Image (tube, rainbow, N blue to C red; front, side, top):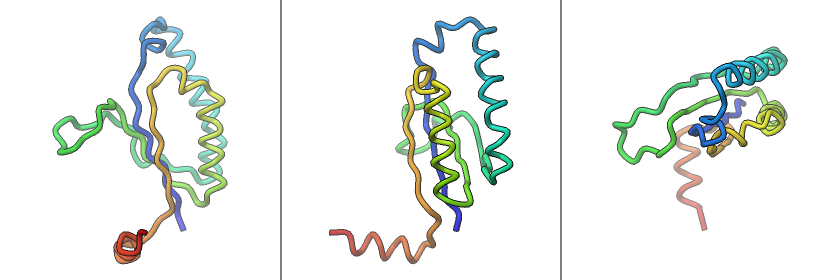
Length: 113
C-alpha cells in the first residue's frame, strides 16, 4: 500500500535574500541528500508551480507530490526536509496519508463523528 506526501510551499524572505550562487549550492546539497531516498523507493510524482486558475487553490506557489512504499520511508523524507533547513527558506505545508480507494474514502466520510 503506497503512502503519499503533498507539500505546498512558497519561497520566503530568507530564500529571496540568498544570492543565486548560495541558492544553487543549497539546492545541490538537497539533491545529493535525496539520492539515498530514491533507492529506498521514494518517487517524486510531480514538483511544479501551482496552477493559479484552479477553484479553491492555495496561496502557495509550488507543489510536490511524493509516493512511498511505507510510512517509515515517508517519515525519512520528512526528517530529511526538516534537517535540510528547508523550512527556514520556504513557507511550507505538508499533508500525508496512505492510499485508499474511492468507496473506502466515502465510507470514512460517512462515519466521521
